[in-house]
Length: 186
Image 1 (cartoon, rainbow, N blue to C red):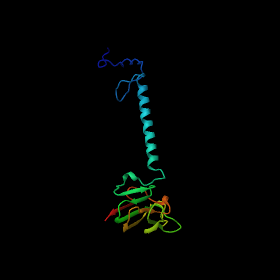
Image 2 (image 1 turned 90 degrees about the vertical axis):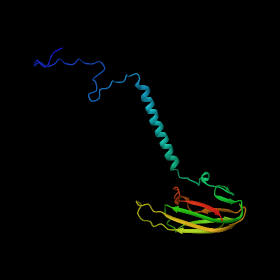
Image 3 (image 1 turned 120 degrees about the vertical axis):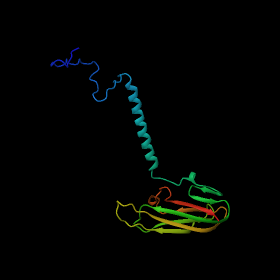
Image 4 (image 1 turned 90 degrees about the horizontal axis):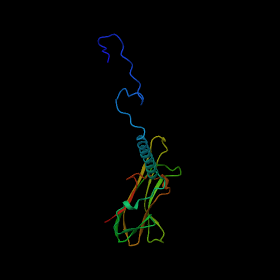
């Protein structure tokens, strides 16, 4: 060993290493080449799984034919008929309400939401409630919304059916709480 404190000669060069040059900032052992292949495969698999789940979740949440989710409704003495009509099982006085929020305007006229009633599944539907709202064209950068709200106390018999009707479902805003329909027995 050369004592560099007592001499003006430069120290001898460092011999070359077989595995390459060591890291300068963080001294850490290099992983062996044989063990990193399964780790890389695992990480690629995790990333691909994440991409597929994200894409699948996006498609599930933003598909265009959204319909009313019957599983989230509370049912008491009411049944469904073809997923669009509520059938009354117990006669009585009911407060029927609906709130429909529109996110797009219609150039032909005001936006309308109607509550329809029919005596049975083969009867003619008649309007028992209706509400209107209007959206101006405005700027495409600013979202426009309008809500048609209606409520009515109605005497219903067993077998009567109720539904909410809008002329164009693509104009309806389906965000949570924006569009509702239901009834309370008085």
